[in-house]
Amino acid sequence: MLVDESEDSYVYTRLAELIRNQIFSDQLTGRVPGIRQLARQYSINFKTANKAISILISEGLLYRHKGKGTFVVDTSKRPGDLITIGLILPDIVNPYFAKLAQSLQRTALTQEMAVLVNTSYSDPDTLAQTLKLYRTRGIRAIIVQGGVVHNHRSLRTIMNSNIPVIGTHTHIPDIDDVQPDVQAGAHIATEHLLENFGPNIAYICGSDEPIMKTGRFFGFRDALLSKGYRVNMGYLKKAPPTYKGGYEAAMQVMKKNPKPRSIFVYNQIMAMGVVSAIRHLGCEIPFDVAVAGCDDSVDEREMLVPTTSVSFSFEETANLLLSLVDRRLKNPAAEPVTYRVSPKLIVRKSTMR
Image 1 (cartoon, rainbow, N blue to C red):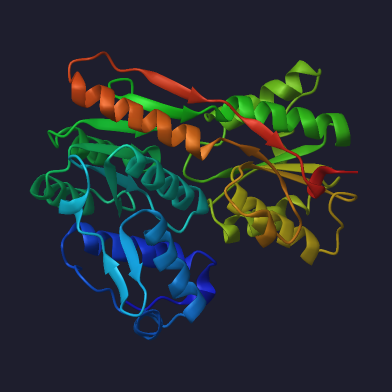
Image 2 (tube, rainbow, N blue to C red; image 1 turned 180 degrees about the horizontal axis):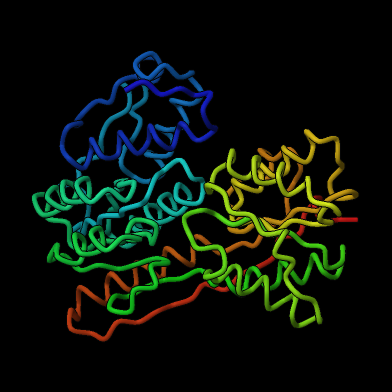
């Protein structure tokens, strides 16, 4: 598999995912190929390959033996019975999903659990293959992110797996679920923009959700209404939830007359694209246009302009998900419960006057 490092700055997470899955499927045992060999094999640089290996070492899946190389940890020598959980995500390129996976794996190992990560791109056939692997490998429970089950066939495929299912942001009433409270998050972000930059606020939504039927939109709308303002429908824009999607949506929104004074963005990777578009147009952030995102999944050091964002604790999310796994395994007939992760607004340069 050839990985083009120029495509995104999260290549190391994809390589870590690949090696992790090889470990859990027993395709990789004993000594791991050296860093230089991995770099050549996947057409990436030494630093990126080393970062992927370091992630797996921190998760307790690999260890370094000085002078001999890096080796897969022998799970038979770990104390207790290691419970393996499947984690199904829409993709691993989105930094929010990557951080969620990493946090779950770190937290799981402290609880004598391991997490096998798979991506489905919402394809039911891929899901069916993944679930077959899970049954073969004795996976005890599945954690599934909401983007995977947006269509009925995918949902049925997972629910018929005969493996306990825990959701995160699925909004499915029949299963346990952990939800970041994006409505409350959007509300506090919009209030912040209102107080500092006035009511001319645009909202750029991800195309994976209906623009006016999401918690984010409700929070955005309610914050405006609470101050006596209405939503300017001309300032709403829907785009793919990617850097490019954010960039192209911002280029269109900025053509409006008058231009928005601030923009609230569906997620942080889209917000990076929005910032890039605004700078491309020669506008200064925040003095011409302010920007706030949602999910705080991108390291501030990787931002063109440090961008205000709504944060949901990955550690809290991981602990809640694993507590629901433990509860479901101990009591399969328990009534489904929903936990919400409260938002916190991280204010950065993009909204500081």
